[in-house]
Structure formats: C-alpha cells, structure tokens
Length: 379
Ligand SMILES: CC(C)(COP(=O)(O)OP(=O)(O)OC[C@H]1O[C@@H](n2cnc3c(N)ncnc32)[C@H](O)[C@@H]1OP(=O)(O)O)[C@@H](O)C(=O)NCCC(=O)NCCS
Image (cartoon, rainbow, N blue to C red; front, side, top):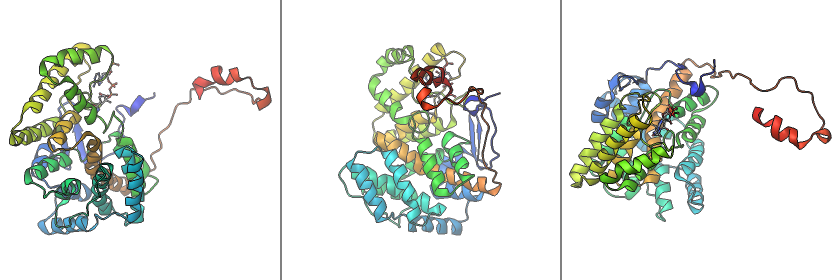
C-alpha cells in the first residue's frame, strides 16, 4: 500500500526530539520545549542536540568561542551575495546558493552553524543597499545575529526573544527538511545535506508560512473584519496560513511558547494592538476551521506566532524563513550525525502504475497524438 506523503511511516529512530501530536507535546533530547525555550542559550541547545547532554561551563565556553571564531565568510561568498542582490534573488534562494560555498571554508559542523547568520544578515543588508558588517566575536550567537543585521548593540530583551525562537524551532522530528538532510547524509556530505534541507524548508507548506500568516493578519487589520475576511478565504478554498499540521492534532506547543515570548516583547514595547489583533484572528480562524473543515482537527501551528514574534523583533517578512534556517541548521546537523552513526542508504520503493507492454516505435513513425494523450498520464 502506498502512503502518500509517507503519512504514518516511521523511517528512523531518534534521540533528538519527540513530537506527540495527540497531546501537543514536544521534547528535545529529554527536555520539554517550554524549559529549553525559556532557559537555554542557542549554543547550549546546539550542544545538547549534538552531544546528547547539556554542556558543562567549560564545554559551553569552548563551544561558544569555537562558533564565534568561525563566523567570517569568504570573499567569494560575499561576491556571490552581491550578484544575488543585484538580481533581486529571493533571500532563501540566495541563502541556498551561498550555503553551497561553505565548502570553500572549513565545512565542519560548527563552521556551518556559525556562518549561516553571517550569510543571512549580510544578504539582508546588501538587498537594502547596505554593506555587510563584520561578525563580533565578543558576542554570543543570537546577539551577534542581531548585531549583524542592524549594527546596533544588541538589547538583552531582543536577544532573549530571538533565542527563545531559535531554541523553539531547532528540531521537530522527521519534518520535510530534516528528512531531506537525512536522505542526503545517507549518501553524501554535511554541506550538501544543509543545502538540500534549505531547498525543502523554503516552501510555503513548511518554513515559508509565517510571512503569509502575518500578511493575513495585516490584511484583516481590524478584529471586527476577521470573520468576514476568513470566511471569504475558506469559501474560496484557500488555506489559512499558520493553521493545521501533519502531526499535531491539538495546539502546537511551540505556538504557546512563541505567543508568550511575543506577548512579553509587545508588552515591553508598550503597544499591544497587533498582538490583540492576532489573538482575535486566531480565535475566529479556529472557530471557522471547525465549521468549514469539521473533524480535521486544524489548530494553530508554530508559524502563526513565529510571524508575530519576529515582527516584534523588528524583522521584516523576507527574513522570517532564513531566520528559521539559522535555527534549524543545528537540528539538521544533529540528524546528520545520528544518520551517520547507523547509516543505511534511505531508499524507499515506488509502485509502478504506468504501462508495461509497449513496443518501440521509431521517431519518424510516431504521431504526436500518442505522446500528448495516451502517454502523458504515465510520464
Ligand atoms: C501544514 C499542512 C501542510 C499539513 O498538511 P497535511 O497534513 O497534508 O493536511 P491536509 O493538507 O491533507 O489537510 C487535511 C484537510 O484540512 C484542510 N486544511 C489543512 N490545513 C488547512 C488550513 N491551514 N486552512 C484550511 N484548510 C486546511 C485541507 O484542505 C484538507 O481538507 P479536505 O479534507 O477537505 O481535503 C497544512 O495544514 C497547511 O497547508 N497549512 C497551512 C500552511 C502552514 O501553516 N504551514 C506551516 C506548517 S508548520
């Protein structure tokens, strides 16, 4: 029997994350996501995934220093990013293109994690006519990323909010990009696995949803218009971005973690209007999804509150998915390590449903009708 989308197929064992879609729980290497998001630095989370335990103070300091020392990107990568900016290439495509050049520098795991923020922030600046900034080795990972974007000394509340986000989305079972990374690792190298995973992450059904989710909230603009606007979308057969999940049939626990972080950020900034609007849109959306799609158990997913939190951090929409990648790359690499430990090439089977008894016809004797009609469905 074919399982379309590999629904329900268990294709790996992992010690990295446990996603319980019925109870709405996410555990990362033994720690509930709520704890990790609240207390960990991104360096600690990455170490935890790569080594199975939290680091000691000495291990953490050494690891943080190693990451800080590997942030510079090559001149060739910067030239490529300039070309991408001149051609207005989408940020995720520019990131994928530039990530391939990581093989020019040391392509070890810390080097890849350390350099992704330099690429993302450098490209963001180039697209706005600004020069990329040099990484600051005195700053930790999240603080350095914020500095690379706007050149401002990072404020601890923004660092904390970004770190909460990075910790929350770092790993999530065999999602599409992680599966891609494991497939490529089963035959290839780390940089190739990351480049492939970036390609999988980009699409709107995976990492590309927060932008459209925020657009939807802005488009609605006023809570009193939410119901009518959402009804129009659902009646037109559109999906509401930021809702629904392959695994979670109750609320995605990451949505709550990020909602709380967003609430803190907006409260401190002194303007709760967007937060309140998002809450109102969410309430209406959940009610209407139950009405239009009864029994499908469609709940708020991580992307809805990602959009709000990253917007609260002052990030614009084109930065959302690349920032997701800045976090998830640690998870992809952890899965690559796990895959390598007991590697077996990932090679599922397909069920052939095309014709089997054809006879070869020389090109001069073929009528175009054969190609376009009888044949096309099987191709
Ligand atoms: C995440 C997602 C791809 C999961 O897809 P999936 O497990 O393949 O689920 P399906 O697409 O088969 O959805 C099942 C049913 O619910 C509907 N549905 C799923 N998500 C929906 C949404 N966000 N809005 C409206 N309807 C939705 C589908 O149309 C389908 O309806 P049907 O039974 O009448 O055909 C899907 O929910 C989605 O596209 N969500 C919006 C994009 C998004 O937020 N992505 C980020 C995920 S973290």
